[in-house]
Length: 89
Image 1: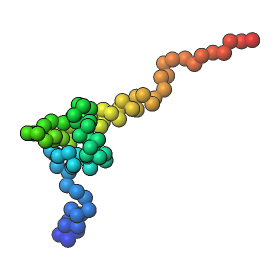
Image 2: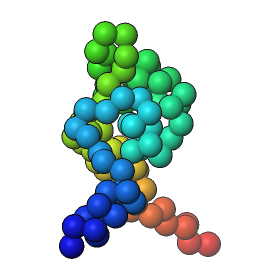
Image 3: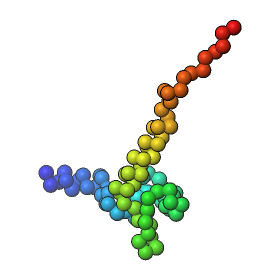
Image 4: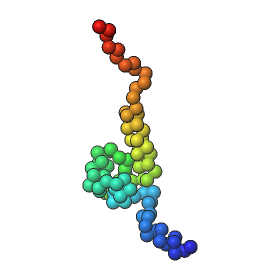
């Protein structure tokens, strides 16, 4: 049992609540340079600790949920509008 627990730690990196830019970029699946740009522009939730960007996993999860909800709402057709009717000839 203990051997499999040690093994699983090697395969799955630990995801901490507060991550540095490298850990957060791995978590989000984007490059550290892109994440740095997004953090600087205020596009992703981040804060500075000293002169280093830090990211809370829970805030990133919430942000991703909101982004996903926005994309889903944009993709859904508006069923309240009627289709245009062709004029009869």
